[in-house]
Image (cartoon, rainbow, N blue to C red):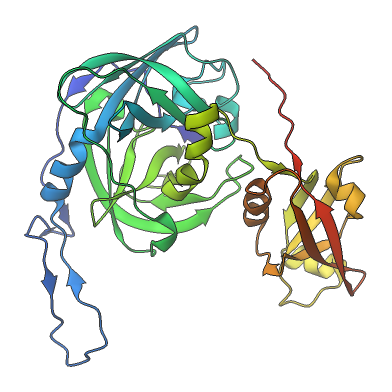
Amino acid sequence: MAKLLFSTALAAFALAGPATANGFDIRSVSRLVEPQQTDTKRAPMLLLDVPEIVDRINPVVVNIRSSADSGENLGSGFIIDQRGLIVTNFHLISNAESRSAQTSQNPQQSKKGKLADRVWVTLADGRQFSASVKGYDEATDIALLEIAPTGKALPVAELGDSDGLKVGEWVIAVGNPLGLDHTVTLGILSAKGRGDLGGQFDDYLQTDAAINPGNSGGPLVSAQGKIIGINTLILERTQGLSFSIPINTLKSILPQLAERGRVTRGFLGIELRDLNPELRGVLGLPVESKGVVVATAERGTPAARAGLRKNDVITGLDRLAVTSRVQFNRIVAGKAPGDKISLQIVRDGREYTLSAEIAEEIKIDKK
């Protein structure tokens, strides 16, 4: 079961101990070291300076406490604008009935419900402010808070590029696990593009950096000291598997959250399944076939008007190869209502190209 990373623990103050990896103290000065081999094509090796990275990141990391009918929850966030804009997880500031650090089964369950009654933000220097919800997006579990800062100027996080990450890179998690203020943990990026964890747009970064309830909304940081993810959930049935929202997901919706408070997405009206060996056999497709299979095309939707049918295999969208359900959904969601797209499909062994017009996703308020 997936466990969302908020906590009802009271805040306390503690820092992580010395960062080591396999017995090697990696707190050495970060520098470029030329490889000993004579192969001049090899890139220089970067040695981590974890304390220096933490010194840069800690000031932008905040503690977040929300009060709702279901209780009080504690989590994390980070500052992205000197005017007082702060990023965190939506599930942390919602008031879902099923929200519990012990019983959450997947992120979608915990993201339904009205907003918390009150939200407080505590900065790294101890200043505390009441926060308002500037915007939120349940589909990606991202929320944008706003405070009215007083005193010295706020530090601002530097956002990286999650698409450019490579599996195996060092990553650092900073947050407020179990109320332990500004805890730092170290690990590697274990995988990219993890889906099927309960959300329509799941595209998680997987890491073995230790994160726990209370890390929700806190940053996952690269070896270059840039924020490349938002720590979001863990799996109850495992140890050492943690998941973060890629920072590029935030960057893609941030303008809408800041300006409108919500996200408008493109909509086709189809349910998809990833193409797997079993489906290839059922549909009589070659083993090397790639794409997504239409499970249903709802009546009256752009998909139905375009002529999509059950068991159609979508292999391309505007000549871009379709590799997964999550990838396809993200591309469509990024389109504006009224945009026209072409879909390359395989039906009964023959290839076709269909034209579709994107509509606006209709959201039902379940508050």
